[in-house]
Amino acid sequence: MQSVSKKIWLTPLILIIVIVLLHLFSLQPAWVENIYSAQIYPAISYLLRILTRWIPFSFGDLLYLFLFVWIVFVIIRFFKHKPSWGRCLLALRNLMVKCLWLYIIFLLSWGLNYYRYGIGYQMNLSPERYSTEDLKNVTTILRDELNYNRRVMDSLQLGYADDATTLQQAIQLYDTAKSTYPFLSYKCADVKKMIFGVIGNYSGFLGYYNPFTGEAQVNTKVPPFIIPFTSCHEIGHQLGYASESEASFAGYLAVKSGHSPVFNYSAYFDLFSYANGELFFRDSIAAKQNVNLLDTLVKKDMVAYRKYLHSYNNPVEILFSNIYGNYLKVHNQPMGIESYDEVVAWVVAYYKKYGHI
Image 1 (cartoon, helix red, strand yellow):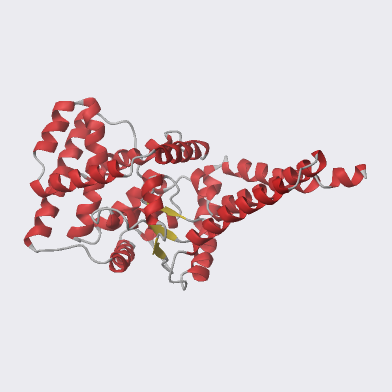
Image 2 (spheres, rainbow, N blue to C red):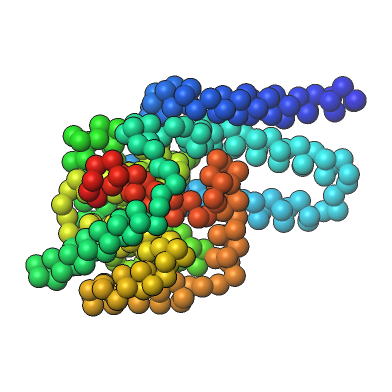
């Protein structure tokens, strides 16, 4: 009986050893970049998209819903009868095995991308500390581009397309971008609307990448000017850019390749918000001047976005934000939820290298 009891812990032990080996592998970014991210991950993600793209709705959303319902069912069933110490120990072991398997699948299907060299390696671009003057220059350009594209939209009477069309246009932008940036080649596209977009609003998610289904999920229950760039950001995750800032920068490269005023406006709205927000802490007067110089229609959209955020502000969002922030810190993004802001460093580095944005 004692040997049987020992044997049941053999599987968790083996799985822990596998995880340790995978993390030892992750300590070599060159290996991750050239072996996993360049060869293994593209094959895995492509296969996942083949399996899920034919489903007309978000299979990943339903998968997470099923997981939540299953966990609730297991907990209720477990406490339906008074648990003994032996039963508790066995349940703990079984739970551990399931979690370890899930984590291994996560690392192999996506998670190792957190430890790659990434887009900087591919572009020979290095985001470094930048001066306030550099930040001012870039923020001014972003402000002007934001104003220009909003005025173009108004003069040409360009509205926002339906959700399906917007997602398809995001895919087409990457198809255009690959001629300049081959590493943005995107095959077997699978970008979908989140089924539970309203839940996403309350939990603070504009979209997410599902590593278990290969789907890019976009929350379409948000202000329409947010959706275009969010779509490009999530495709960036699909292409293996786990870092939030790198996914945004990949999305920006795709957008700027396509000359779409609607997508340009969405991208510059996002980038200006981050850049001017950082400038405010360095030079509040300059940041306020930028806001004053915004086009009236841009200001209107900013007010609408603030109202949207305020209307869904709740303790659950704060909880999810903290959980996700800690998740990012564990996975090689020490800035946590503030990792999104780091896209500014990429834009500044691009500007300093090429002289334009």
